[in-house]
Image 1 (cartoon, rainbow, N blue to C red):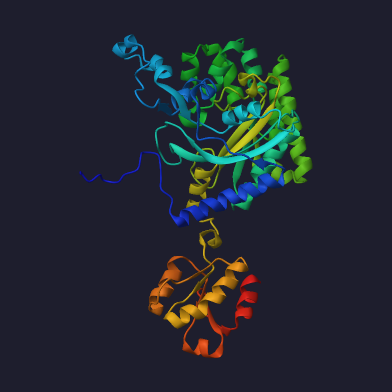
Image 2: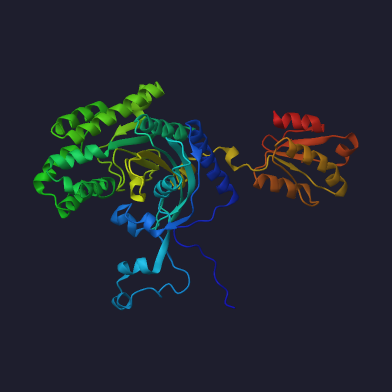
Amino acid sequence: MAIIKPSLAKGTRDFSPAEMEKRNHIFNTVKSVFIKYGYREIQTPSFENLQTLTGKYGDEGDKLIFKILNSGDYLAKAPAGMLEERASTQLIPHITERALRYDLTVPFARYVVMHQHELTLPFKRFQIQPVWRADRPQRGRYREFYQCDVDVVGSDSLLNEAEFVLIYYEALTRLGLRDFSIKLNNRKLLAGIAEILGKPELIVDMMVAIDKLDKIGLEGVNKELLARGFTTEDLEKLQPIIQLQGTTTEKIEQLKEVLKTSATGLTGIDELETVLGYVEKLSGDITMLNRFVEVDITLARGLNYYTGCIFEVKTNEATMGSIGGGGRYDDLTGMFGLKGITGVGVSFGADRIYDVLEELGLFPESAEQSTQVLISNFDKLAELYALPLLRKLREAGIASELYPSPAKLKKQLAYADNKKIPYVVLIGEEEIAAGLFSLKDMQSGEQRKLSQTDILDYLTR
């Protein structure tokens, strides 16, 4: 049999124990914040029916959905004419019925509809699971990655939007980030801009184009707008809006003037002001609001289902795309037959956050520790003497291990060093004769003889 060279599929990664400990540090930190704000965890399957996912992310998003070929002879139901014409797009529904989930929001909407009679509204859930996108892999962008989503459905209160600002702020500061921007906009405000341009039917085209401002620059956005049906006269009206400057208050006042003839646009401004007012009251810190929260009119978020407030978070401490985003969706469950259920949610990009924390050296040392105590093993007598202590340490909730077979001290200490184990218990003839143990602090090198009770007291303290 030919030997196959082991390799990874592009855009995927293995995670070592040390990397998993760091990833879990992120997951546990954001999870604790979600729980603090009243959210409960659910999980959904890795793949969904294809019709559940398509049509929810726009044309560009649909192209990035990983389809799963039907099992068996997947071409059996494919019309012969399509095979001959190589009409791949039309062929898809005939050869695949399932797909890997693209995000956690649409599966959540499906979950709400299927479990509607079991849920108490408003329903607040969080979900930390992998998603898949057939994107071109690059730094900070993977084909398989984790999302940490938090959503509430069944409530139209803008208090929810304000709490998401606080959730972002608290989770990211707990992770050690000190300079980031929580960007806010409102789809109604963008709809108002399309209205005053006299092209409400082109709102999606406008949003898709201006959402790329960071990537392709103003000139690139203008070219795309012209290609999508806007005129040079439209662009002249749009430029000062896209390039809005000043404080949050100044931006809002300018927008009120620009959108004074659009009821939809003014509603969007009013919602933004309400959210910002809640944030100020809930945080009690106007400095936090001014420093970390920014109104950004170019923020559009490409997904079709957003209808109100939209969010995006970027770190200013490292070169990285967005590390979070989300928004309000007024009728996401409607596509599954349940009308009138509004919702709002945001997501944390765990993989990008990991890369940022790694680059900035923000992972605490404790994030890489699994075992707290290693008990040495020099011979059979020492091994038997160690077992009761090992049992007591584990009963006390202290992560502990006994070196599995007799070995030289140097080898055992190197093992503890490599695993970043902070304490080693040494057991020699003297310790056994005295009924004691030597506890070595691997950082300071300090070593002391202690009883079993003293070791337990010291390590639990």
